[in-house]
Length: 366
Image (cartoon, rainbow, N blue to C red; front, top):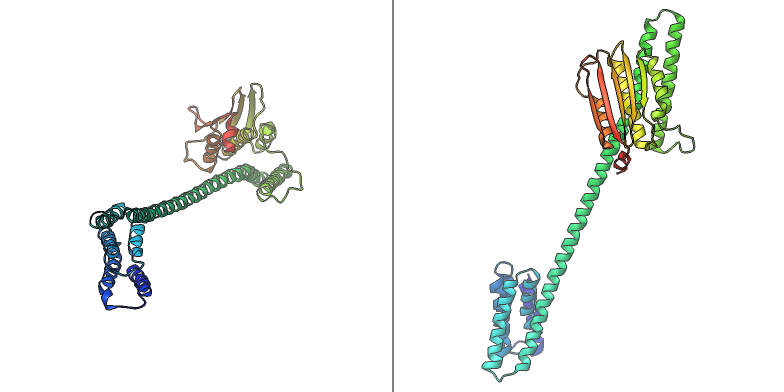
């Protein structure tokens, strides 16, 4: 298609200059057909194509042929070779054409240096234009590649953040619901087995309070996620300051809990304070579920650069596969750059221990 289009244009331009076809110009028409044929194999044989186009163009202009736009053949071949990165073809073809033209003009001809210099300059302009076109296309291709890479990076970052947010929401909902539902379940079981009305009513009252607290915390959590309760004052986020209330509610289930606090309480970052509370809450929930008739001890030790929370019981807890509760506690500690351990005690019972650095809020924010 390229050879046909260029050949038709050059032939039409030549016929326009000669005011129609003439028998004496058969050789000129043949040279035009040779150049057009060379363009048809430019992709498969670039060196041959550009060389034939260059030599035929040089021969056309030094021969006794009518004036015409034959130079278009050589210009198109050289430009496309340079623009597509076929530098060998562009250099060889250009050199062959210029060599023939220089021989005719400087050695065998009248020595028209000015004409040769003008042709040389014109050829260099064509080659430079091809190189610029190649650089421009390479620049656009690299720009598109970088834009696609940036888009993929943004999508991956969005998916990573979405996954982390889903895990955070899952941990929060699990910690909010698991403890309260466990308390409700224990109190409901106690109410079924208590024959005295006062004891049954006390268990039902505890169920009512626990369910109300569960609904309040669930509504608060969902309200933050959906941002529909901004006009209503939200309750303070759970923290280690609320351990007394947590232990009081746990005592109602029959699990006796002792609280020990050591060290001066520093100004805890909110993420660390919340994580420490949730770890204690989940550990007590597991103790209520699995320890049976037992006593639990909650230890909170404040240090200058970290806080340690530890929950141990002397019940019948045994080593079990890691569930959502332990996994959630481990993830909370890891997110803040802390350490976590959950294991059975040598003398019976279960131990949960987490150490949270006070600088962990920076990791959480990231």
